[in-house]
Each structure stands twice: as C-alpha cells, then as structure tokens.
Length: 283
Image (cartoon, rainbow, N blue to C red; front, side):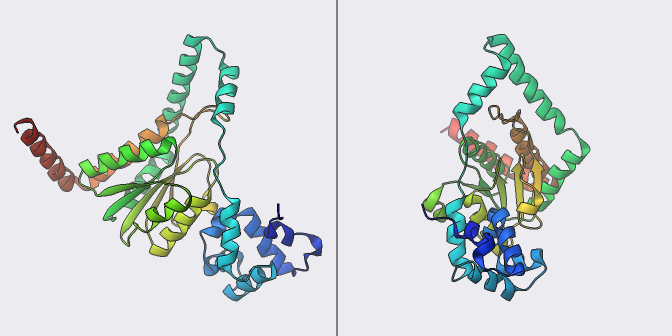
C-alpha cells in the first residue's frame, strides 16, 4: 500500500521548512478537524496566513487543499469491535445472570447520576439555546445511534419542530448532506473519534453556519468547529459494551427543553396530534 503522503512529509528528509513541518504535524494529529476546516480556519488555529497554509500543503505533495482532503477522507473510518467489547464485559463481570444484570443496571445508574452534575446540566441548557433558533433540526447517528436519532426526530416533530434524520455512510451520505439548508440546526451523536462522515458533516455545517450540538463520550472541543455545543454522554465502562441510557436522557432533555422555550408551538402541535388521533379512531 502506498504510504500516506502526510506521514511521509513528516520524515526528516522530506525537505519541508520548519513552518511547513509544523503545519504538517498539526494536520496529521488533527485529521478530522482539518477535513472540517478551510484554509482560513487552519491559518487562524496555527497563527499564520492562508497563503502559508496552501504553500505548506503543496510542499507536502498535494496540488491543493481539495486534493489533500481526499487523503484525509480515505484515512478516516469508524473503528468498532462489538464482539471484543462483549467478550471483555462478560470476562470482567462474570457469566452469572443476576450478577450480570445487576452490573449493567448499576452502570446505567452511574451514567444517569453523572448527568445530575450542574456542569452537565448547563451543557444541556446550552444545547437547547443553540438549537432554539433553528427552523429545522437534522439529527445524525449511525449504527445503534440511528434508532436514537429516529426517536428524537419523532419527538421533535410531534412537538411541532420540523426534524429529519441523516446517517447513511460512504458515498450515499452525499444525499444527506445536500438536504441541509441555511437556518437548520444539527444534532450529532459521535463516540470515540471523529470519522470521515462526521468530519465532512462538520465542514458543511461550518459553511452554512448551522448551530451544532455534539453528543459524545470523548471528542473534545479542539477537534470540532468553534461554537459547537458539546454534551458529554457516558456509554458505560471503558472497553465494555456500549450502553445508551445517558444519551437517551440527554436527547429527551433537549426535546423537553425546546418545548419549554417554545411552549405555545408545542401545545398547538400536540393539540393537532390529538385531533388526528380522534379522527383516525372515529373514521
């Protein structure tokens, strides 16, 4: 396999200047963030000029920032091994059924307890404030998070806030991206590390200026576009099976918070819901 040209540019014999090497090191260490950034964004983070960013990228062997993004996209993909996580969980808590159930329920209780922290609650409040001005809400989730995204979408739509789910992967994700519009809000569920779909999603959200909420277990602010409202959601114990009660609690809190700040719209929408139910029952 051909060696990654970004890694290759870090070699002492690459011929890069000190400035270009510093930029190359940042790009290598922050691939997802770079993919979601413009030359101007990178220049601001690295305290340099747009032109210096472009010259450095060309010195790394790319004709343009767009060409380098192709390498970044190819290097980013989700990493998950549910079988290993399940095996490790069973090994650590044992195979006795009552003990196993008790351990899982205990972990759920710890996850929910963590959300009672005032700082955690303030992050959810910030998420609600972030989404409140949005005309529509796009909700991103893949794998098990797809079901959670669909659930939040249904709740928001029921409460009168137009919402839709995005979350295909690969080339098909382009169809999701073209559905985004100026004035939308965005909720992203992403765990572990950023991967290519989320990096491209953040890039488009930044271009459109969409208010964005990230629900995550470990992705940090320095790895996402400025202004992203980050809400921390534990997913169980490290390297064990993923549990989702904290995420569900956060999503439901956000939905309820939006209803509180937009009470009349929510009540009107629920009244319509009840009217439709009555008509269906008496049809």
